[in-house]
Amino acid sequence: MTGASVYSKIRPEHLRRQAVVYVRQSGTHQVRSNRESRQRQYALIERAKALGWPAKGVETIDEDQGRSGRGSEHRQGFKKLMAEIGAGQVGVVLALEASRLARSSVDWHRLVEICVITQTLLADETAVYDPRDPNDRLLLGVKGTISEAELFTLRCRLHEGRWNKARRGELNRSLPVGFVRTETGEVLKNPDRQVQARLNYIFRLFRQIKVARRVLRRLVDEKLKIPGQIWGGPRHGQMIWKEPDFADLMRILHNPTYAGAYVYGQHEYDSFDRSPTNGKAKMHPRPIEEWTVCLQGVYPAYIPWEQFVENRRLLRSNWYRHESCGAPRKGSALLQGIVFCGRCGAKMRGYHYSTKEKRAPGYACVYAYVRHGRTPCQSMSTRGIDEAVAELFLSAVSPAKIEIALQAMEELEAQRQETLRQWDLQLQQADYEVELARRRYESADPENRLVAAELESSWEEALHQRQHLQQQRAAFEHQPGQSVGDEDRRMIRELSQDLERVWNASTTTMEERKTLLRLLVKRVHLDGVSEAGKIRIDVEWHTGAHSSIKVDRLRVRVWAPKTPPKAVQRIHELLPGHDYASIAKVLNREGFKSAKGLPFNGQTVGYVVRSRGWSPKAGKINRPRKATS
Ligand SMILES: [Zn+2]
Image (tube, rainbow, N blue to C red; front, side):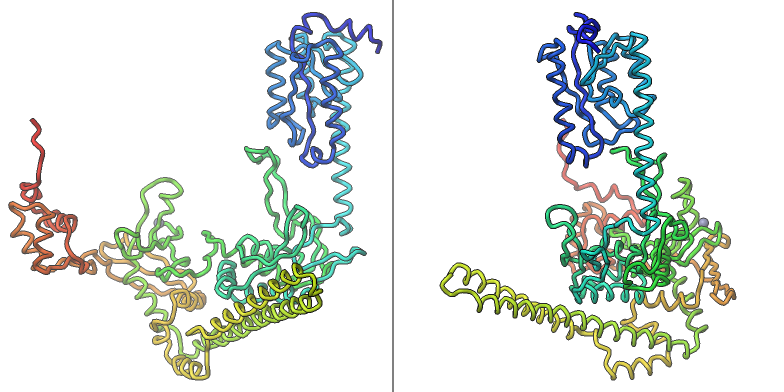
């Protein structure tokens, strides 16, 4: 293209409008690594000036940096460009390769169309195109198509390459903590014995307790740290010890690498479900059977593959959902997780003390309300129901069955020993560090005071650290109620003859009761509506048998605390001529206590007055009022 033809395309009306330099690169990675191309893009500003535009008439749009191409909906810069061209403010658009302006053919053709209407030129490093010229227009069309085809094949090639490597298990995936890759590419367990032991401990704990949140709580209670890795930055990949964190724990439990498997394609990307903020396709996990590449026995395993599959199943079933019962929780509603509505079949929720009203815990069928905004189906207090189910359960269980509980106690003791072992490992590490610091200090040149002082202080620090650990370990060892001694065992064996006593013991937690109950009871259906004043309880046993009982629906008055009758009488006497606050003062002076055994105040007096239907007006006579006129 000769200079003459270039300049013949640029007319004075073009020069009166703006020149826009459009800078674009996709991917933050490219922004970081491909500086040179960026330099070239900015050099286009100079080219705009050379073509005759004044310096202040050149605008740069580079808002798309760090955004990946394809489709314009998330590229603000491109939108802005289109708007300015559409408004007829742009004389020429300069881009590194004109067809890179738009990454999809649709965007590109739209751009060219608008340029035709608004008589806008397009330019790159070598040429200026006038979209109104039939030859240029043909060229631009072809360029756009080629660019899109190139992009497509490039992506396919990259994608295929990754997949081919992955299928052979050769695509190097980043390894989770607990593994190291040697210089020859071989993957080994982390040689640090403490890292290995802690990971093994986590997997063992999960196998015993079966609930990730409880594993986390154990680790926190035992003040044990978990190994982690630094992500990004100069210390990328370096192992560190960190406070246990739920997300980290889940990552460990969900990662198939620990079962020795090489996996690729665990997730699928839904291109119809994109993040509204960055336009990226959302990621959804695939079930194990659908993992595209899953090669077992590639890495040294911490757990067998079967256990990994089982762990995943457990983690899924612990989600509190309609289909699964969820893990037994601490709450005082005994039937939590296994209680269903006898009217509509939906799962009922256990609710607990609402903080203000101190209501008793209860069960409610709120499915209709939550899902469809309709009136809740039914709700009832747990009182009476829990007792009746417990009684049914206790009478159904023979004393022999409690051996299960004893086994559980022994497991508890084994867990305790295991924890102590973890502590010892941590102490060994501390011993080693003290020793190391001591040797460093002793081998230092005493003449070099500064270094010696520094080494001395780190020796002291290590000593201090060890002492701290020793204290913590001792505290754990001597925690009351942790140790299950022979004496305790004997008592439990005695108790095992009598489940009822175990069940009712104050030391038995609600979680344990729920776990015991679930050994036998599959589901409980409640119906408190069909028969007035009664609740029908249907118990479905794991054996397939059913039992039905009816209990009386508790009326609030039966168990709600009552204001002492004498106080009520006194309030009635004082009501004419006194306001609530002054009645309360009198009552407190005379030593009366409210229903909850507390001193009276205006509110509690008001409650008594209203609930008995006495005229509250009488109580307001003496209330001080400001004259209105
Ligand atoms: Zn219902």
